[in-house]
Amino acid sequence: MSTLPIAQKVAADMKSASWIREMFEKGRRLKAELGEENVHDFSLGNPNGAPPAAFFAALEAVAAERAPALHRYMPNAGFESTRRALARFASSEYRMEIGAEGIIMTTGAAGGLNVVMRAICNPGDEVIVLGPFFPEYRFYIEQAGGRMVLVQTDEQFQPDCDAIVAAITERTRALLINTPNNPSGAVFSAEACRALADLLKRYDRDDRPLYLVTDDPYRRILYDLDWCPTPAGDYARTIMVSSYSKDLSIAGERAGYIVVPPAVPQREMLLGALTMLNRTLGFVNMPALMQRVVARCAGALCDVSFYKANRDLLCGALLEYGYELEVPGGALYAFPRSPGGDDVAFAEKLLEHQILVVPGRGFGRPGHIRISFCVERAVIERALPGFRAAIEEA
Ligand SMILES: Cc1ncc(COP(=O)(O)O)c(C=O)c1O
Image 1 (cartoon, helix red, strand yellow):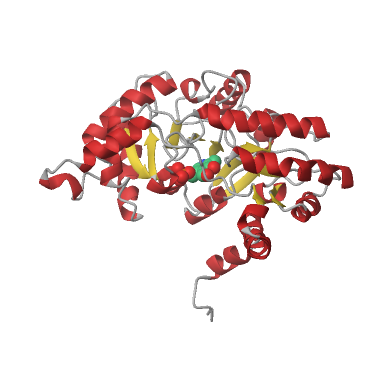
Image 2: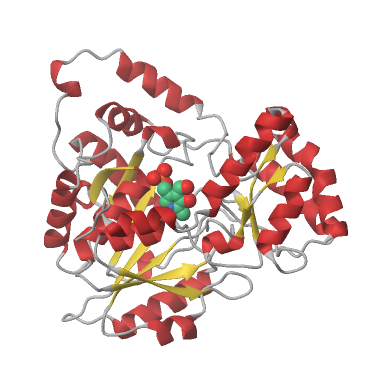
C-alpha cells in the first residue's frame, strides 16, 4: 500500500522534469534579482495579441442580455445556436459540410483532447504522437489509460511516413497531429497530409478502428499560406479539436470545440461518448457566456500580422547571426538548432544574457530551443544582442 497522500502516478508525473516550469522558475528568480524589464522571457506560449474588435462587440452585446435561462446548465454538447454558428465556420475552415450535430463545445482544446482520448482509448491502447510535440499530450493520453508512442518528424519537421508505419502495432488506436506545430512552427505540406491520409487508410479496419486526431488551435495563425493543409478531408475517421485561445487571443476563456465530420464511421456512438465524457469528466463544456460570445464572432480572427512581424524580426536576425532554423510557417514559436548541440547548455548560456527559452528536450526533441515570439516587439529588439552574443560564445 502506498504511503503517499496522492496517487503514485501523479507523484511520479509531478517529479518528471517539466522544462517549461523549470525555465519559468529560473525566470522568476532572475526577474526578482534584475527587475522584470531586464529579463527577456520567451518561455511561455501565452498569446499576447489583442482580441479582435468583433470579440469585444459580441461580449458587450451578450453582457446586456437579460433572458433568465442564459446562465443555467445547458445541453451537454453546448448551446444549439453556438453549435450551428460553429458548424458554419468549421464547414468553411475545413472545406467540408459539417452540421451542428457534429460540433461539441469544450473547455479549450485541452479539454477537448482529454474527452477524445477518453472516448477512444482502451487500457493500453497506443496513440502515436509526432515529435517535437506539446508535452501535455502524454498526460491526456495516459489519463485515458492509453500509452503515448513518440515518432519523430524529419529535419524539416514534416511527418516521416516510414517511421509512423514502423510504429503501428495491433494496439495503435490513433495518430495525433498538430499543424501548425507547437513547438516547431512547422506547417505540414499538402503532400505530407495526403500521404498521411493514404497511410492511415491502409491500416484502418472496421474491427480495429484507427483514428486521426488533429489538434488545430493554430490553424489560422498562418504566415505564408492562405489555408492550412490537413488530412481531415481525405481520411474518414478523423476528429478535429480546436479552440479560440489563439484565433481570438482569449486563452483564459477556455473556449474550445470538437468537430466530428459526417464521414466518420459509427458517428452517432462516438458523438454520444464525447458528449457524455464532457459531462462526466466534469468539464460539461465551454462556459455559457463565452458560448454566446463566440456564436456571434465564430469566424473572427486576431491580427495575425502582429505575430508575423515578430516572426520576421526574430527569425531574420537569428539567420543573420548564424542560427540553423526552419522558418516557422505558423503558430507562435521558432525552434532553431541549439548551437553546440546541447539544448540545456545553450538555454543556460542564453540565461547569462537574461534570455529565457525552453530546451527542445521538453518537447521530445533535444538539440533545439523553443523561442515563443508572442511577446512585445520591444522584448525581441532588446534580446537580439544577447542572441548574437550567445551563438558567438557557444
Ligand atoms: C499544440 C497545443 N494544443 C493544445 C493546446 C491547448 O489549448 P487550449 O488553450 O485551447 O486548451 C495548446 C496550448 O498552448 C497547444 O499549444
